[in-house]
Amino acid sequence: MLNKLQGEIKKLMPEMIESISEMIKIPSVEDPKTQSPEKPQGEGCYRALMKMEEISRELGFSFKNVGNVAGHAEWGSGDEIVAVLGHLDVVPAGTGWDDDPFSGKVEDGYIWGRGALDDKGPTIACLYAQKALMNLGFKPKKRIRTIVGTAEETNWKCMTAYFNSEEIPTYGFTPDGQFPIIQSEKGILHLEIHGPLTDKFRAFAGERANVVPNRAFAKVPAGLKVEAPLEEVKEADLAEPEALLGPSPEGNFKFVWAKGLEAHGSTPQLGHNAIIDLFIGLDKMGVQHPMVQFFAKVGHSPDGAALDIDFEHEIAGKLSMNPGVLRVTQDQCKVTIDIRYPYGVTIEEIVERVKRHLVPGLEVKPLSVGGDTTKAPLLVESDHPLIQNLQKAYEEVTGEEAKLLAIGGGTYAKAIPNTVAFGPEFPGEPMLAHKANERLSLESLEKMTLIYAYAIYLLSK
Ligand SMILES: [Zn+2]
Image 1: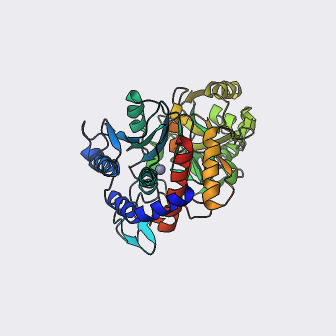
Image 2: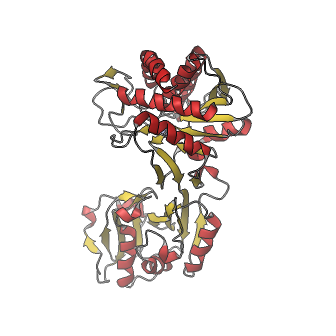
Image 3: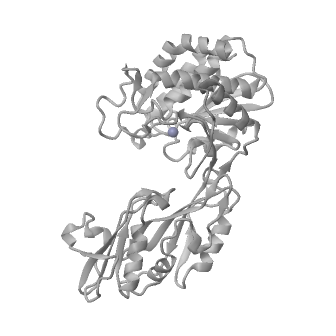
């Protein structure tokens, strides 16, 4: 089968490249300006979904549009459903491109443009992978659905809408991560710690909870002696306008800051959190406030040990914790913490333990609650037939070991139970998703299409 598939995919390459290129030319960025009940994600996303329907039908699949935000191409028969889950929306082009980000040009062995890798190229590759099987006369014993959404990069409402009316597949994969196989993803929880409003100090750090802040600053009474790790800083040297802190309290104030090291919020141990240093310094300087007292006591604790939430799972790994956003202004006093928790732990357990450590005056509020399955931890056991078949497909095509990966983040796989991320980035390839000059190598495209075809064959024969 593998040899026959290889030959068939070679034949299909020119047509597949053309389809990917046409899809890239549609700038399917979520667009509030063109949103309407008929086009819930705006004009570009709507057009991309229509294009997907056109390509699917031309290749011989049936297609179902679900509310103009999602849909699926289908073939095969049987009670069970194997799902391939991809998305047709893209993040904005951003800057730094050498050419038009939506050119879809084929040059130097690559297809160029936003979405080439994330996720239009791989999604269409999966469709042609099935076309190759179809051309070889293969009759799947399961229904195979290529499910596409148009809100993956934003709010995932495409999946909410889709599963309101459609069956949950038996199992599947999403070509929206990396090879070999992401077997485990941690759950994502944002906790807000709220404290009483104060005029004793102002503080600011971070824009997003999932980034380890590399700078945190505060405005404190001028009479206090500055203590390490804080340094005094002139107002003129602060990039953040004072406007961020709102109107100042009465009296004489000076600015202090703490410097850290930026890292992704899912790997806080690789950075150094400036918010924590800020609170440690403020505590030493004698600034009295429950928020200061609490975080100075917690200190640097990227695995959550200081809050007794250092849960660990043998496959999924350790919990991670990152206080990423700090705001103490005239009308708010809060810190937002990004927590990545391993399979087997509940949000309620985490919140309960954090509560036990809070100092009087503080409150904790989970921002994503238990019912939000798209943020829940994911784990498919190593001996599950899904994992076994994906491993076999990857190993037979590449000749390399299909290692099982565990990550802290969230891929589209979280949208469906028993689904894992499988490709499209090969080990050692540069990470180009969401970056300038995003491109898909034709060599990788042919290889991944063969892996996908063989995997779908193994999962549905
Ligand atoms: Zn993606």
